Length: 208
Image (cartoon, rainbow, N blue to C red; front, side, top):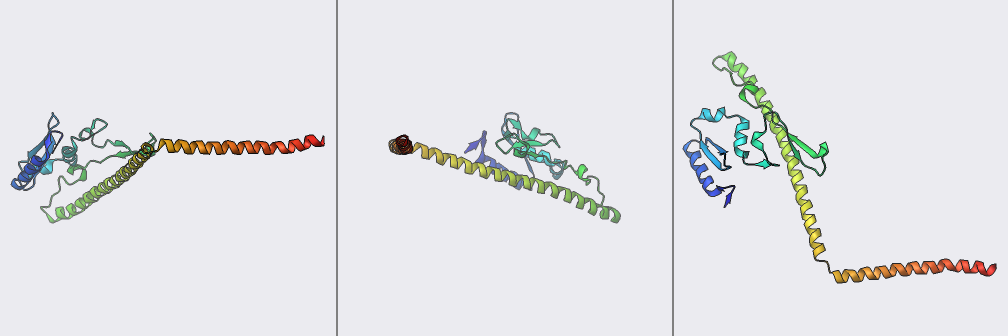
């Protein structure tokens, strides 16, 4: 089984091998030809120096929305997703991830060589954790919203398919007979009503 020129079985085997050989430190990306690449990182530092956005880009680089490469979305730029049937703002969802670099979180130059430095590092790391948790919560809410939209679209597609199936399976001859019968009944009722309206007029003419 392959997808986008990637042999999934081979990729899984290589992924397992690299993970075992390098203590699970690896990078997944893609080359200029659209093929997925599996790159072994030389050290732990190579992995930690990769920003959150770069790691995410490696995983979703081959994914596109409206021919827009997700990996090319600039840091801090919101990605607008259409989740409704109109162009109104409430039918659009903006996805934006803030700067999660160690420098932006304030943990790039912490010093735990002294007791004072370690104490200060605790507060800095705690604040960084709170920021990351907040972003994770936001992304979780967005994920739930997209799941809800996907479920609604799935139900809608199923209903449309059922309606199409019912239309295709309709007995045209039987439906035409039912339509003709109902049409005759309506016309008969109208004729009887017209005759009933003529009776009072006849009585009035006799009285004149």
